[in-house]
Image (cartoon, rainbow, N blue to C red):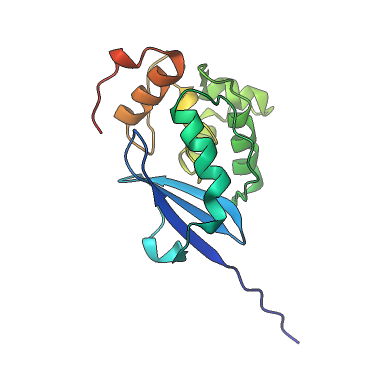
Length: 172
């Protein structure tokens, strides 16, 4: 006897100061937050039907974040990835608002000091940008390195969190 499981996916698009954000829910839990032109963005047909109902709290918290009223998200997430990827994403959530960590620091925190490149790859595959703050990871020299949403967005998000957004270029 074979058991088949059905997965329900829904999505909605919300506006943000960084361009439209596509929110995806899997079985009612937030499982994706994707920016326009984002690297590793899944195909649109995998997002499920348009339905804003599962996203009320996520949209409210994102609005508060962009208004500067929220520094830490409190949402149930469904993060599908390898155990290593999920470990990296758990470390990302521990980076305080307005601060950064290097890929090497994250690798050390995971007990894998030689895995900074693997941390970078996992960081790039983060399915829930902004809420799982992969934009807070920088190179060992302090340089802004790759970001799936684009280096310009990364620079603006970091400047926003540090209260220096007037110094960042407004590209969206």
